[in-house]
Amino acid sequence: MNKNNLSIIFFILTIICILSIAAIADQCSPGPFIPEEGSDTKEAGESKEPSEGEPPEEEFLEEEEPEAEISLVEKDKFSLTIISVYDNYHVNPQLKTDWGFGCLVKTEKENILFDTGANSEILLFNMEKMAIDLKSIGKVVISHIHGDHIGGLEGFLKENNEVVVYIPASFPDSIRNMIESNGAKFLNVLKPLKISDFVWSTGELFGPPEEQSLVIHSMEGLVIITGCAHPGVVNIVKKAKEMFPEEKIYLVLGGFHHPPTQVVGEFKELGVKKVAPSHCSGDEIRELFKEEYNNDFIENGVGKIINIE
Image 1 (cartoon, rainbow, N blue to C red):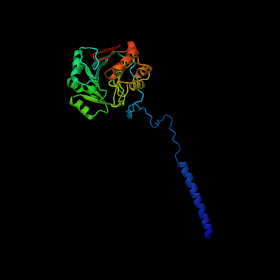
Image 2 (cartoon, rainbow, N blue to C red):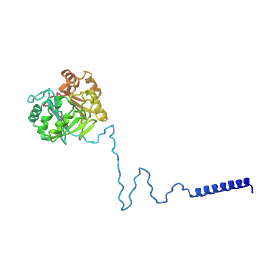
Image 3 (cartoon, rainbow, N blue to C red):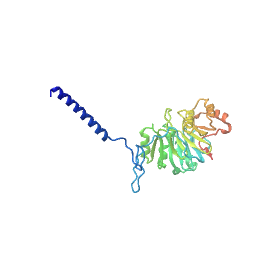
Image 4 (cartoon, one colour):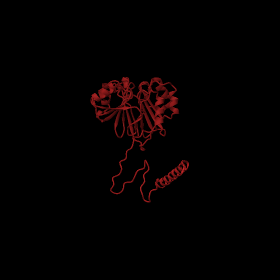
């Protein structure tokens, strides 16, 4: 047998071996998994029911980001009382006036002090005259950094430090240190935040300076309280409507920061029912609101008590 014949035979045998191995491998390879009837399968992300006597699997959930739109969880509104304790306008001549702003928000759940004016002696004098128990206040909200809104805080904390002080997140550490050194706690506010049942902060709005306002749900609709309205009082009202688009605006009160005269018409367009401007709003604007709103204009100043039931 010559070499050519041997090469042909070797080639044929090689082909036969390769085909045989491929056939064996095809028979041994696994097909798709088909569970037997009654067997338990679990896709990724599905939970598996534990069998009897077997402890349930521990489930880990990532913390969810808060939704951009705020929904009102509480369905029943509540009665509300707002008492002006510090202002440069006055309603009660027995009280002291001074440039600044502060009011007490009384809800069915708790009392919240919004701003503290410039001088703690005047603040405490007025609150004592009005028979307000300082110890009944559990929370303090400071609108912004200016002294005519935060100046009375330290003196108040010396009388009652069993409070949480809600401050804009942009505040300097010196304010936080002062709050803590007086034995109170603070909470930084950046975005809209629920402070109490039916009571929200708008979060920091750019002024300058950055400022937060209160949005309260009452029996009659939204009540918006502004400290000095540096971000623009119309912008603050729009922020409240953005937070709670289905709610009507019943009352806007506080400092309006000398807005342009067209603010009166803009309030009407936004559906604001009542107004109570004070502090830095300006005499001209107060008179314009009084002319336009008539009986829905509230003469606001230190000593004023507004009941919404």
